[in-house]
Length: 58
Image (tube, rainbow, N blue to C red):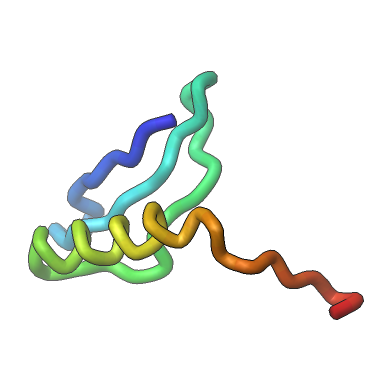
């Protein structure tokens, strides 16, 4: 899997996560004016891989 940071149509930074097949399986909820903000957002998601999973029955 790979995270990619890109500029959207409003020239703001966003990120998405692609699986081994190249499909986008996750994406940023918000756009960032600053590249470093986008990197921090991406890193927060990447580093939360052991976060609890909640579902409607919880």
